[in-house]
Length: 351
Image (cartoon, rainbow, N blue to C red; front, side, top):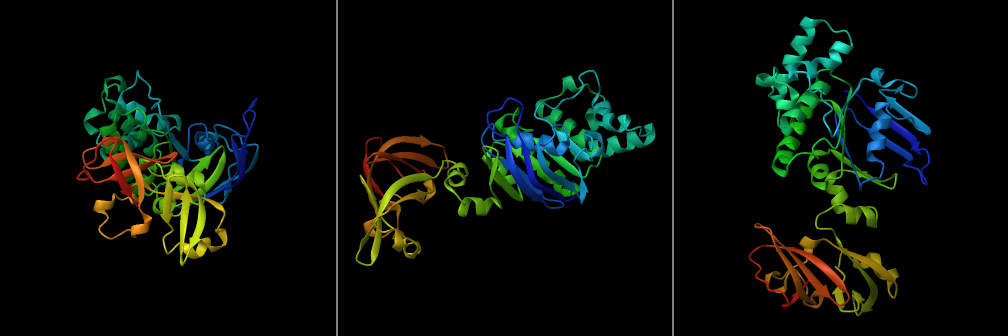
């Protein structure tokens, strides 16, 4: 298992108005899955290409098990990359596609055949080895692309949005497959995606990137529970966190977050943090699942924390509903149980 250390890594593409990556510092522990997530164009794939040696950084260092990779050509980095588009050779069989990296390295036919069989067995491709890649489904092609990476037994796997071409059901299946294979092999893995679900379910840790800058690196649960800034708070979680610009007011022993059409008591656990903000504007963030309709609150919410709202849109999802609510000038999103019966235009209270 290999450890990767990145320090001060930067990259500006020729002709670009701003850097693609800005002084990235990142440590990937041996054997872990680190997921890179962020909006399109934030620099995720560029970082992967720098690690693979397909692009050159403007500055900084990359060390793999203490070995500096600057100037080392891609084929000598002991890194295997799986692309979004599979990059299989259509005229070759599955067997030859998987074995191609070994053939290019001069591995003998007998050893090559053995390693291809082992990789195919791990991926459930044993019965497909003699088929052409053009005869395979999307999920099978993805497995072949993984097989071509696995057969080399590299120090690091790099995955660049490998599931984006698959349908929703197959994506779920392949997520668990990739996680299982990575655990079985114990290979250090960096996985790029724009899909939050992939990031939260697959990563030991997740690195959030915005406009080429690293925002936060943490476990999935810590990203969700303790985001370090508004971008991470709004990016992680679906539906997104509600943000409400409010003024802090003190009334007796309690604090309230107030704006037009909105007044909610600050939870007792947060009140001490906000004593110095009385009279000032702050951004309140509320996860959709934390908004509770009054008749279903069951004593969880103080009476003076309920806010009158109007039901605007209801999305039925079977096991839950998303409810879009109008509270003064702002719209709030709530995630509720399907047994909460609501109608468009209905006046309710949430806390």
